[in-house]
Image 1: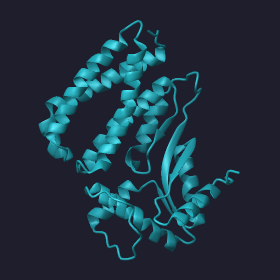
Image 2: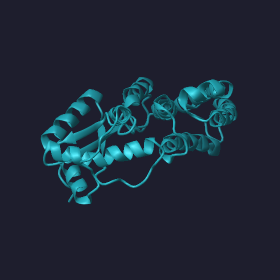
Image 3: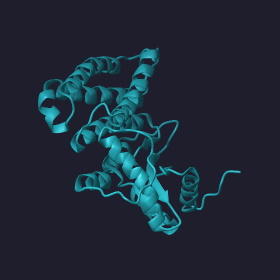
Image 4: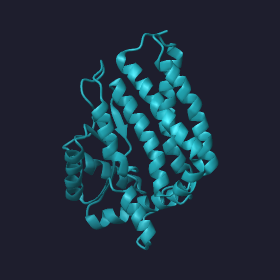
Length: 271
């Protein structure tokens, strides 16, 4: 048994409240939500029923003067698993939600992850390289609710960005067509390997709108273009750390892109 700190108890109680509200919404409004989100009604309702039991358990745990250590570990691990599973669902091809449905699934993961990290005084990492629309809201939740801990005295946020860097803007735009194809394939239920770049792509309005939203946190261009974008991104978000993803088909060109991104912050290769 452990005697929980104020921060841990607060995190567990917040988890119970959020899970309870989500449970009621999903259980009793699944039929109304399904067409709005383009998600299966059965999936929404079954998730709600699971959350009813989970919220009851966590709510009970949050009222205990002492808590079983194993159960606390399970709750924390469960939150991490929920966040990962929510994101994995979008990439699995098992469901094809519309943009509102995608936002709903991502927000489930964001709120859980941001609130838990804030209440426990832990660093917070956010996958803004494929869920940029929710980035600033996630940061606001984390920074507003952060509680200092033995690990951290202040919030520490890590954000992700795509960087497709080439010798010129034109070359980088060509390299970026691999990522564009991958995004469209995944979001239309056709996941697969990263495609080769193509000069012959002609996206329709629906695909252009999708790419504009999903790739909002993406730097594409020459070294100077990438440097300006990354420095503006860091200043706008006040991120403490930026994680870079370079989905480039050719491995050597991918390594070069990472090197260009590192140079934007005057970083040197590890010896």
